[in-house]
Every structure is written in C-alpha cells, then in structure tokens.
Image 1 (cartoon, helix red, strand yellow):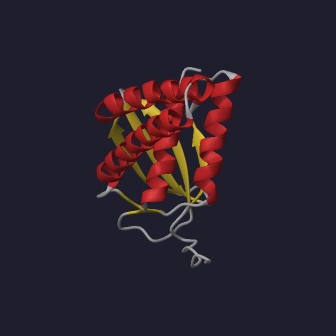
Image 2 (cartoon, one colour):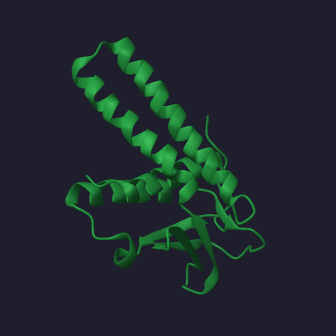
Length: 162
C-alpha cells in the first residue's frame, strides 16, 4: 500500500546542530546524530502553529537546560524560536539509555524471547518519550507521531556520550 504524498510546505528539509552549545561529539556520537537527522529528514510532518510558509529548516541549540528550536523557512527567513525545557525528559532519556544498554547486552548473551522482551520495553520507553515530546510541542509545532519519534531519537542522540 502506498502512502499519500505529504504536504511539502509542512516538513523539515534541513536540521543543524549548534556545536557551541551542544558540543562536538566523538565519531560514534556524530554518526548517531547524523543518522537521526537523516531519518528525520526522510519522512516528517513539521509545521509551526499559525505559519503555513514552509518547508522549514530547524537549528537546534541548548541554552540554560532548554532545547532551542530555531525554525526558519528554507530560504533562511526566521519563523519562530521555541524553548523547550529538557528537565521533563531526564528520566525517560536516562531510562531509555539503561534499557538500550540492556538490549545490546541481551543480544550477545540472552535467548530470543528475552531479547524480544527487552526490545518491547525499549520501544515502550521510546514511545513514552515521543508522546512527551509531542505533548510539549502541541501548541507550538504540528508534528505527527512518527516525526515525534524521530525527534525524540535526535534528542537522545544529543545526550549520548558514546
């Protein structure tokens, strides 16, 4: 089954990270961040509430424990900047990293049924983080669940130390 074409004016076409505030990652972390951005750009629904002039470019930075969504049009014209506190994400990101570690350990040492159980927990935490992100953005940026999942993956990649 083919999916209907997405509205090209309601999507991200570029995502950049502010290295000054986020930091220069190790090669492994840089790869994870690049993969998260690639996946996000491949398929997304993203439109600042009250603005219909996309597609959009997103520049992410961190200021005072807040994730800054600097949203611009594709031509660089500023649209809006939203600050999102990272505090509500601490627990779910920490738990997500713990279960990811358990998952990678299980892959090497456990039975398929144990791996599947750990993976279900990992997916549930990822969904929880995605739902939290969608809820925190609901009055700011229109996104679908798959975009929320990809953005949550990117937030996790920003926290990953390698």
